[in-house]
Image (cartoon, rainbow, N blue to C red; front, side, top):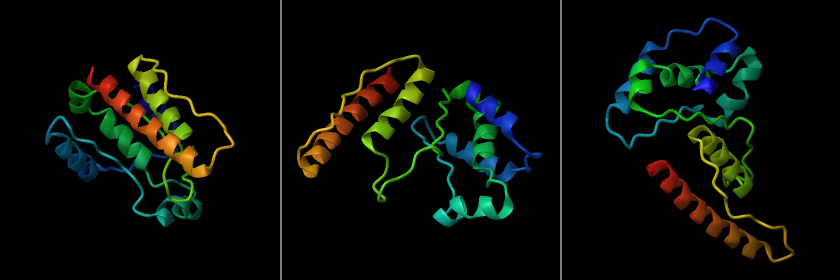
Length: 151
């Protein structure tokens, strides 16, 4: 995808050979059609301290781009690119409903579809009721996204 090409243009140095990592990920992808691979920092410290100490990232995005652009992946899978760096987690509970639907919108745009997700409204109701409403909306959105991905 174009997003992968954009990553290659942003690399500030010659990518380190990561043949062992790429091989392990490609091997994992051969295990079947319902495989998901996530590349992440090993800890919060790695994600937030290492780049500031060295002035460079850890290479997760480059590694993901190298795997996504591999011919065996391109011929077998539809690659969707989602960058989560702009999203912050609140209180360790994950993405907010709005952030979650923003992520899904980015994926749907790559698929060429424009679903209408349930809207949340600012209300003066109790926070527990608002949370329950968001949970119900999240369930509905997950179900709709699963349908989009299957079609």
